[in-house]
Image (cartoon, rainbow, N blue to C red; front, side, top):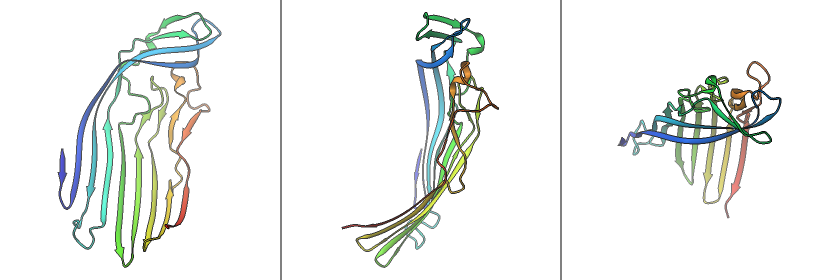
Length: 227
């Protein structure tokens, strides 16, 4: 569905994605009944219904004196789940190939790892012309919702947000100044944690974790002259 007026642009669409017989390998997991580790291969499918949206609000109309003020938002809502799993892992990699099936390792119906139900970016901005130049003020608020790092949902990942802002100005045909900052509130946003915790390789919380976070606060100042 699309809406396009002087005050509002909206593009909203639904989707349904399905995968079948997807192999994934996990290294360093213990082979049941032995003291060795190997490579475990798991086969799964998934179903993901969802909604995508892109909105741009121009509250004063595009042709007005304040037409340069906009509020944009993009994001999605998706509820992906695993299918076609049976709890079986095929072990190779330095060990005698063998398949073990354990009911507790069946993750059919659980949420897709690292996929939040909801994530969005909200971006207000203002652009104005003055004399021989232009100025633009912008801001971004990114939000990523609750999700899990692994297939068996043994390790939850908390929601996080990141705030960015900046100003960009041009003068004449040559000068450009940009001052911007990302993650201004210096949030710790964990994007992933060792997914092997599901199948015996890795330490579940509250123990020490091997994780990846978003970058900390950064500020950029850039002055350019265009020849």
